Image (tube, rainbow over all chains, first blue to last red; front, side, top):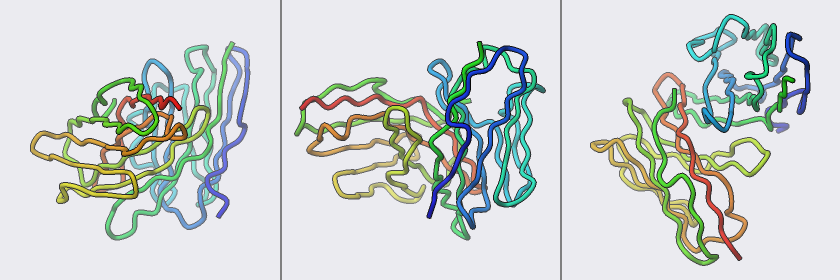
Length: 116
Length: 110
């Protein structure tokens, strides 16, 4: 299996620009997660989807952040407008817990975002 | 918000020694998982222990869970330089959500 695929791997953008991060989950996985990792705040859950429906977006920091999952094989995380404090590694992850709900999560390699 | 705290924040040992990392969590969980992260990479699942289990082994890994104290520990026996990484615990709920701790940075010196 190809694993969770994220793009871009690295992005440097200017403050105020729109940033779109993309994710392709593992085929057959019905949960998709977006995490953000920084030195200061560690690994934070931003939002997660089940069967393409957002279940919990309480971790989304503010209205500048939005996430969509138009189909089972694609999700985006958008930041508009971006700010320097958004600089972080953004991880997408997916899982298929099944009936036991033991949710082992498979992570992508991350999108390293720098906003200058 | 983070599920809990890992202890210690950083651990430095010699190859061949055992490494023990602890994790405390705040909310009710269905399972407790440990993940490893190599520098610049994504997290990789190591082991899962259910809330009704007390101890679990996988190779050189041993995990314990004490639900009364809301705590877990990860023991890596006979450590190797290749075990150098960050280790995170994560509390899992029955509806699929995983919340991670702050992590322990383990350095194993050859």
